[in-house]
Picture 1 (cartoon, rainbow, N blue to C red):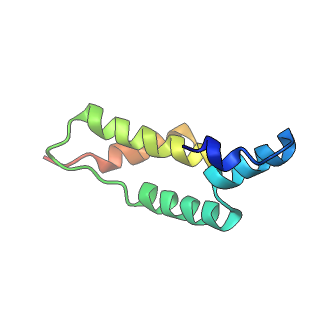
Picture 2: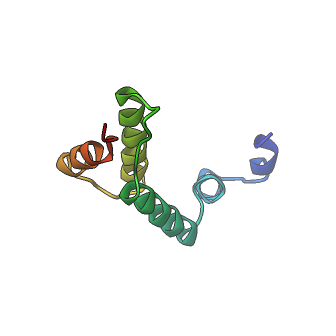
Length: 89
């Protein structure tokens, strides 16, 4: 499906630029994604119906997405967020 869209590029450099533009978004899109991911991290909560594994997996996925976008989180921050998000019983 995507091959047809990139078939017209004659050299590797312009092909790679087109691929990056198509699949990674532009600078403005990346900034918006980072802002949304940061908000999701700050507002991260769990529900009483989730198990510890589910909560941990969701938080780790979010932390990984932030790191992919160049936002580094300390392990201490992630651990603290995990502990604070646990439902009180």
